[in-house]
Length: 128
Image 1 (tube, rainbow, N blue to C red):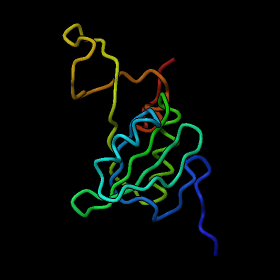
Image 2 (image 1 turned 180 degrees about the horizontal axis):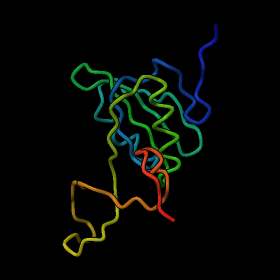
Image 3 (image 1 turned 180 degrees about the vertical axis):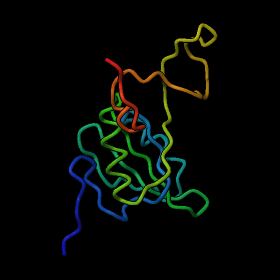
């Protein structure tokens, strides 16, 4: 039986391990993959670019998500179907805090979900 290739990411089950880094930009995937042992680009379709390799012998991957919740949701769902269960968003972000200035390095502890996808993934109903 032929392997099921994901419609958007162009990868199959077993192409990625449990751990995946998720930048928005396809260009950032190559920069991140340079830190992997034996990096290999396995797919590039539209905004979704995926590299695999290992870190300290553990299989890892990096997949770009494009901008926003809907394309990130697509990437995460297809990665999950291919075996990933731990994903970490990396890259730039906006802030509504006056304490955060442009160019600051920060680790967000929360997010404003106003796009609808976050509510769907968390099982939260929007009012109105």
